[in-house]
Length: 234
Image (tube, rainbow, N blue to C red):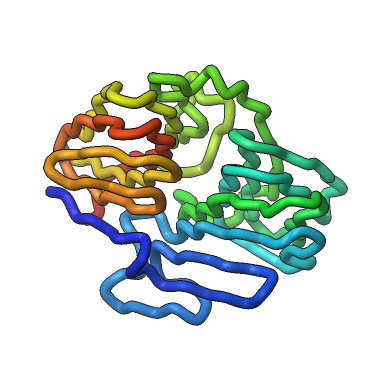
């Protein structure tokens, strides 16, 4: 089963310094039929103006992944971590029993990043932060394992959930298969470019929810993709 999500019809928050598209209910956007997809609670496509950002605020009991699309993302938190990440790099924060952090664009260009929240398999984990400086070539015409809850996965980021996150950049005309087996589902975001998937023509920002169905992704233009694979909703 496939469900298509049009980027231009998603929830949106515009605040001058911040322009966000919400894949699921978040902040001022509330749709009772679109709260989450399995344990995937939030996918926000955020664009942050230079010299601005999210000031210090708290989180708890949530696995948070930030995937930088363009610009610079500077993170600081109550565990004394401070890091600046750029295109294609990823940070992970397990909020656990509680953490304070900020996310800013200290650069002179627009920052775009995907903010992803995943419900953990239990509450009360010790807070943790990590990041990984992936090389861009690692995702060219193949799935790059980014994060996983499976200890046997080659993904360098470990999360507290039965979830696998992959990134890929498929060059024009290329194809990649995304297997979604029985009892599993996946949420695929076309970050940049254009792609054809099982009769759906996806443009930049569009998404596809996939349940127990193997799909083939064909890049019409170079297609930059993030996929979140997980146990099927019950």
